[in-house]
Image 1 (tube, each protein chain N blue to C red):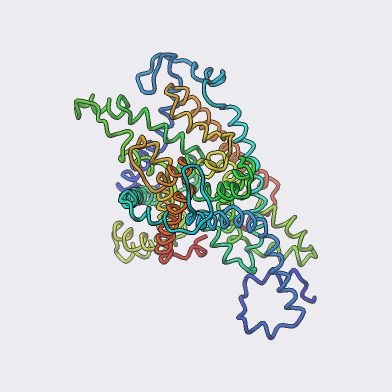
Image 2: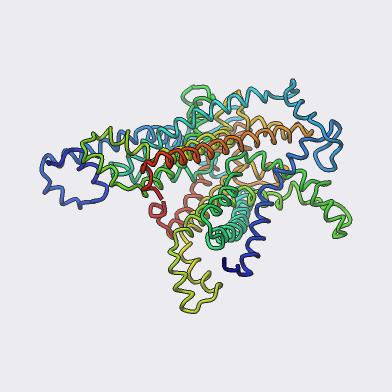
Length: 315
Length: 279
């Protein structure tokens, strides 16, 4: 049977012929390869359209507007560096960026410890697949509920007359209600950890489930203790999952503004709040300049983290 | 059954605490939403009643809860359908290399990791400059797709990476056309995963806040409405609304999961081997 269009195009993904091989292809084969590329283009066209108009164009727009000028009520096309000069000249900027990094670092640390432990328990200590799936689902369901509600639900727990304070008082640990539980940096980090630990659990669990169990058997046969297996076998093999989880958590925290605003009772600031405050004042050029700096910061951080993992291999 | 090591019990205890941490606050507001009419935002309970739920259905002093719920629901469905269709098409496209496939992949990663407020701000600016009015069904819809599509496609990548091509080859050997192969072999096999894509599409849209903030226009979606309420509502009606929304989310998730399980059972009963190649 002569090769028809389908067989050739569908097998293409597996053979990545070097460019020079193109010269040896017959005219027919070259045409078929072209059609394969064409169908890929057509099938991906809707995604291209969405991402170009709602992602690429907006980013370009933000970059352009960051050079525009503004009056109290409006903004106008211009090319000046005032927005950036103001941003980098203000000590507030540095404090707020530092604050954002601290939130990210603390959240990353706690989500990693908790996420790794939970994933480790599910992957290596729960032996039935049904239970693994069931417990995993229980861990992920909150991901599909509203973040705002999950933040609100800390009020009765952390408030001045909340459960935490009244419990501590009844135990005699404290005499008066502690004021810093709700509407504080503590509450912000707590909420971040509460909201984003799932983003660590899922990729780490996914990577752990793919570790060949015979490697662990081999380590045990060679006399490794449980702790040694964990440190020398499981952690190194789980690194890709840890990296993907870290990218999620760090970018989510870096870009957040609503958690910080709500949980700190508007007393703390991060970069996201700086942007949203400017937007509230209709100072779009200034907001855009801050957004550009934030984006560059996030890209650099992702770039560094991507050095440790090949995402395409992990899917 | 072999006895479990001590570490199992320690880790199981940790896991239990984690679940308490995860669900405790939600359960707390669920209980507090049944406060008596004179009850406040914290314990103790001042009687038990459904006062605040009834209150929710009455005329509100501020906002438009049911209108915003309706908008969020419709938007969620629209985003869900679009996400499923575009993700399947994209998933099929990514099975082979096409011009720009690497660039598109990195764009998807960008969409996933870019701070949400940038999308919100940027889309708002674009509409402003084009002289278009921002509206939840146009700018809001597009801004949310930049969040749901990457998730949909990541699921499709995972599905197709585990896809056994022998099924397609068999279909083609029997003379099926390219379209027939997709329609009668590939789609039925990946169908259960599409339930997952749909779940992501709906719930991520339904709960989205930051990307809708500057793109929803004058009519709020439910998360925006709820956030507005946090600043000026200080009664347990807030908890009642939270409990109801969370219950609705659980219902949706439960519905999707049940659907997935039933679909799987049905297939097993019919002894079809479609999908057995999936891991």
